[in-house]
Image 1 (cartoon, rainbow, N blue to C red):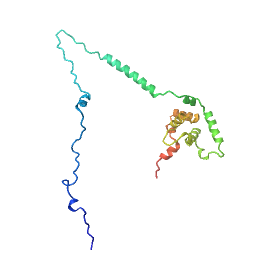
Image 2 (cartoon, helix red, strand yellow; image 1 turned 120 degrees about the vertical axis):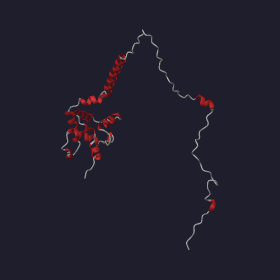
Image 3 (cartoon, rainbow, N blue to C red; image 1 turned 90 degrees about the vertical axis):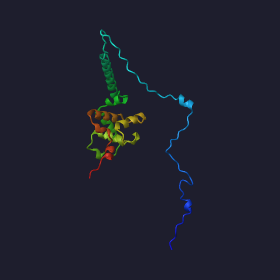
Image 4 (spheres, rainbow, N blue to C red; image 1 turned 30 degrees about the vertical axis):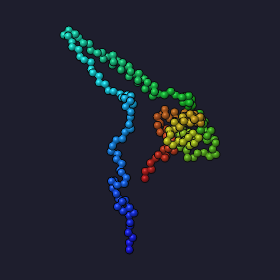
Length: 203
């Protein structure tokens, strides 16, 4: 014989809102009572309507002078010129001491820096044979972990951050970045490892 389920409360358990706990209603707005003296002290900005100046009745012989618009136009043009000058000055930031020093570095000095790095190795870098000297220097900077992560950060910003933190990043790297920037090479800012990680595999 199957077991039957018994309800413990019976009719009492299913009682509606008339019996037992009352329901909560959120339809009424409940506000905190504020004393009248505080209500009166609250300053509410008022909107005042300003009437236009009343038109004067002119006699037959009176002539009304038109307002001079040319002066305002000239002032606006002068303001526009000043704004343009400020924007031009803001667009061309002053170069730092490190950037000025980096611009003076020659290709021979960069080559000397790279030869010193290569001299520390036992075997030559076979996988970098087809790369230019500038790309070799930048890739070495990318994998130098003491200057912080290279993923998601442009190379120039990474160099500047390392400089601010007192990590003494190589000035040759900044020189290479500035030279490539002057050539119009926009891809130089992204680290090679970042390009590999962000590349999409096409099957």
